[in-house]
Image (cartoon, rainbow, N blue to C red):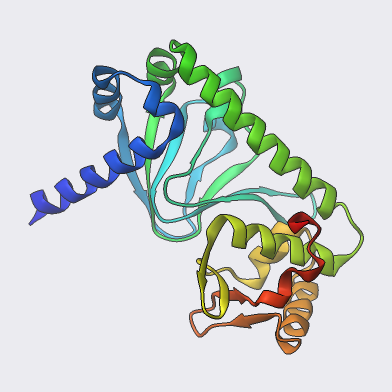
Length: 238
């Protein structure tokens, strides 16, 4: 049974690697070598996956679960910068410039990640010009996304901040059904507040207002459903 489970895990790793756009430019032998060099490591919910001082040692690929990129402010409040799901990756910027990241990565749920060491990153990815082009394209996309979030989250309108965060999470982690778009993760009010850079009490009040206005639904599983009317004031959807 253990061997069968390991085989399933390895098959899933190969599927995820095959979906990453810059891996598709590698030769068959290079991809096999990179897969062999990939280390897998599992973390329970709320465990620290990556701290600032270790952030330039590996590139990480989420094999299963979800993680949040966070930083704790001088007021002790946690600020969430991004949430990554299965098939996403992080740590590539530190691989490129050798500097540490000013944020940490924490498991939102039980999570398994694949680790690519810097030597392997340089050997198999940075030596291939087509791969480098794909990485640049990906970084440009992330930069545009960051600009959008920064523009809206700098607003003094707390409701608009919460709407932007929920809309962004629906775009990146949403599953559509007859009710609307389900944000396929369990997020506490505190975590949403960390993403919107607001007090938890403010977020709780706004979520209650949106629920009473029938713009969202909160399921028994604590997942949030965005109803069709939710998008009417979303500037990111224009």
